[in-house]
Image (cartoon, rainbow, N blue to C red; front, top):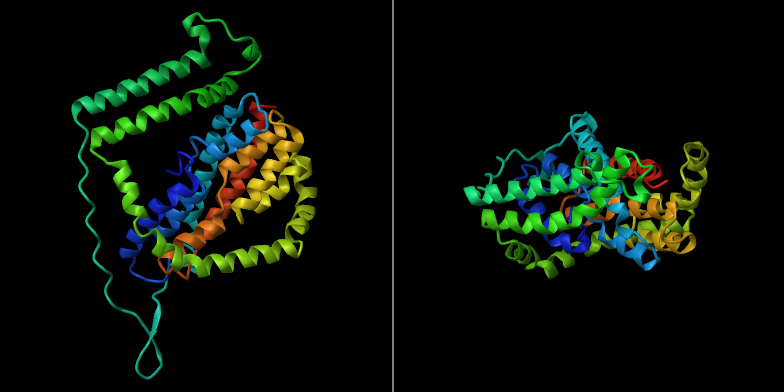
Length: 347
């Protein structure tokens, strides 16, 4: 759901997954390694269709709003690799090592909870795809690979290059081809994959949304705390101070100054970062390089603190361990990769 860019519509599925992980957690109240990995994957998910960013570019008058599909895919691949590497390295540090929670005894003294870990839940059976299902999936993949090769290496098929691609190298043509073919491929692959494995995707989504109202009530205190802290940070000029501090370092790297507020706000607030991206597109135009960079940054990063507050708050996790640092590493790499890739492909 995150890979398809569903945004908040993916939250019920994520909350259901987090509740299942909590049922396997040997230390209730403390995030397990699996939970931290899940959060890192969520905040740096490979983005196949950044729908919101595409919509903003289209509303801003862009003639090719889907051009960021390829750049966002490559940037989120870099972010996902960085976040997974960070979460696996950080979990080994003594600073982030999971400790059993202390519980008070009858005398009021603290004791270590030595109760056995809960039994793991058996995974529900999933039907293996039949021979015709495997064959159909392979035919679909090979067909789109043929279309991709046809656009990237037209000379192999005796086809002339398009006028606007005559000076492009194979890397640029690959990104542009991914931008064009990603949407039809995904709209074909996922329904076919679900059909071959007998997975009722809609029923799974509804099941995760059944207890939505109760989840909202549980996470309200965490959201209120986070939103108050973010607004205090913004109101005190924290974003402006960080922008002035970092620009002397990022300036020589050709990092556009107009992207700095968006990059700093993105891990904190989805609504504020969306407003900043919309303002950039309106000021520079839908087809400018800065607008494409802003859209790629928006589509390649996530509101790490919001996701942590919602997901961990829903299951009562108070010690988040290394989840947020790993997510921020993914956000940082996603921002840097977005600027570099956009400048190489669309510049």
